[in-house]
Length: 134
Image (cartoon, rainbow, N blue to C red; front, side):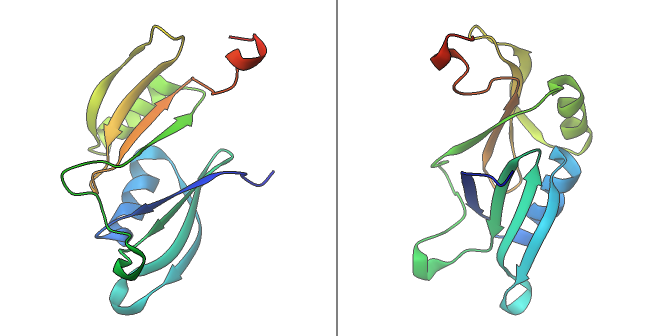
């Protein structure tokens, strides 16, 4: 099934970010469109049925990598947060929220990637409680 929502992230060094996302978080590179001078015009990476687009900065579109602030974070539901956390730590991910059981029923952790984006990986799946299946 194709993803119905994807997130597009901009990195100063998109090729290095793609390599990190694959190594640390287990993404699979599905498509890469090279840009000029070693930049990435567009790429698509998947983890389960989630899709993330990664590209180099596009100032003409107002798309720059995060600097001092993080304008959004990415949340992905995963089956085994403990193993995923171990992989991320081994790959050098900066853990900003420890792996733990949350009050709202998820088990997960939060990490910052080398580009400054914040990622939450855990068992929480939005919508479960909407139908009374918390």
